[in-house]
Length: 448
Image (tube, rainbow, N blue to C red; front, top):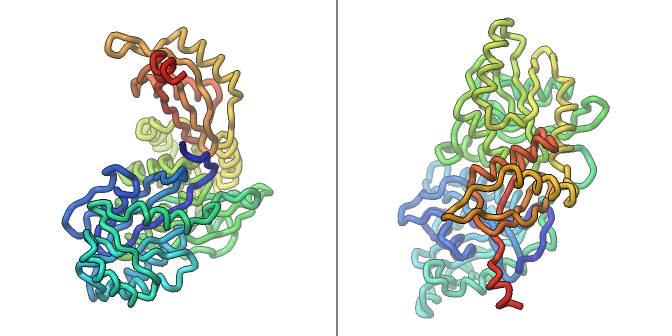
């Protein structure tokens, strides 16, 4: 049984150059084939997080793209990713191919990781038998302590390695959500939609560089902003042009930092430009915020540049293109002139209130019982599942668990989500509805 957790889980970042077996090791940690594995360098490009469980302890494993072992710009690329791992992970696992031995890339990575304040575990991978262990001894030269020989492919010593990872973890994750202090807001969007202009307007100073050239902001910039009598911590992030997997160089690392800023925030303001169509990239950014489980406010910038006829047309386009997030708060603003900016505080507060709202269990079950009587779940395989009980398992965002005698179709889960929103609002926050299938009576009797 897993240990109950609250807030973010401890994070273990698995790093190393391409094709040393990072994704294979991640799969070994997870006990299933989740990360894509291929005998070609560079298959993993995104920073992908998975939830893992070992010896009753839950934690997050992050599979990272390989450090490119190219002479040009190699040191800079290694430093950026290693520094990113140091900032966001609680434990860093550096994977080295023991069959190849220490490379220049490994040495450069080690130089950066030796400065890390977080524990670093050095893994000598592809040690398939005792005869191969002698090659692992060479890794002492990296200056990261004892190399731990494993075979990610065959599972050799993987359990011992997981024990070491657990021992190195802090009691609580370093990047936990703070209680008290200014609420944290990530400001995200495509390049040149006006994020830095909005930060400057809110902070009443030139806090961020503003330029007509897209991509001026690379690193997230923190600003404490006084808005409607309350302090807010805004993070102005780099404009996201592409998927993280297709970005390269500086843009790749900027994308990773933006993703981390969303995860460290409580609410995200996604900035769209009124004078541009809602693009696939806008949709991806919104999805990123939802999947991170953060409260959401949509701000339409440059609203003042359009005439009344275009306003009406744009409203229809927004309703159509953002139909899946009708629950999100939306505000029309002009970052340049300050119009509508003062309304942001009310929308942020409302979204956060929904994000932290808990429905009383008795009230929740009474409502769902009545709902199921009026609209029972559809039959599957000739038998209709029965909903026995519903509980709200968590907040930030709200998560509901439905205990049922059988599987509930995705359409019916969406129906339940829609009805929960109709009843309690949840404006400005994603909510999650999952299903736990109750064991049969025969199995219950056998257990008893």
